[in-house]
View (cartoon, rainbow, N blue to C red):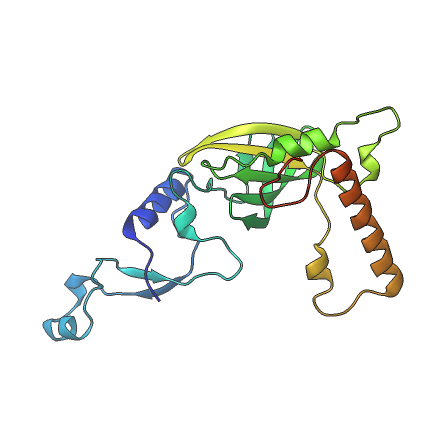
Length: 218
């Protein structure tokens, strides 16, 4: 197991200390003894790694890479943090190549929201596209009937890795892939999901957008 580079670990340690947290948030796998605690014979048997690191850390399955918490990368978030003087972080919902997603408590409205925080170098137009799609184009056009997330709040976060775009939506339900991982849906449930998916795609196309990784506009 290769150790994480020392500058990354030192950066995270500094962030944690600034928040009053002394212990690392990643499990320590193995520690190499200090030079003062090693005899001459043991030094020859257990050398310190070439990069000088005294610790090795396990990778955590299903979590983003620690190395992406760097300038231009993810914004460091800890359970209990207050974001934008309003949103208290409750749990982690997931992550992607250009963002992390958190469950937060909105202290102004007294409700839970999904808070998405982009990487500092992300230029994705996702928030602007969602706002455009969810804006009613006529008196008979009600986007609330379509299963598309509506942005509740949008703001920026200044952190140690740069400036991050962030926005909140209502928390979503479980993903379809997770829900059907162990069994198939009943026929009526599958039909309902398929109908909702078709309606959402049709609605997005009617607004001049196609589904894709880049959010291309027609």
